[in-house]
Image (tube, rainbow, N blue to C red):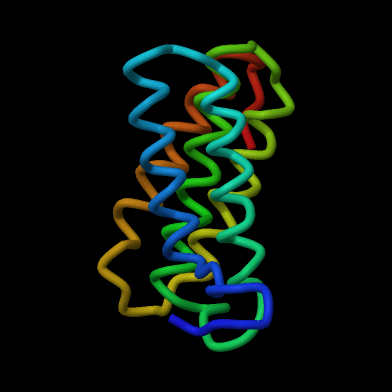
Length: 127
C-alpha cells in the first residue's frame, strides 16, 4: 500500500470493502444512515477509478455496479425516484466500463435489468 505525508493511501478496493461492510450492517439493522455512509464509500471508490488504468476494468465496473445497487437500495428505503434514475445511469456506465471479454457482463446486465424493472413499476418509464 502506498503512503503519503498524511499516512497510508486509501485505495478504491479498500473503499469498496468498507461499502460491503456497511451494506451488510444495513441488512442487519435496516438503518438508512448506514446505507448513506456506504454510499459515500462506494462513490469514492468510483471517483478513484475515473481516470487512469482502471477506467475500463472489471474493478471499475464492479464499483459502478455496487454504486447503482446502493442507489437502488436507498430508493427502496426512501421512495426517492431520483435514486432509481441515478442507479440506471450508473448501471449503464458499469457496462460501458467493462472490457469486451469480461465475465462480469452478465452480472452488471442483470443488475441494470433489475433496476430498470424497479423503475418501470415505480414510474412506468420504459427507457
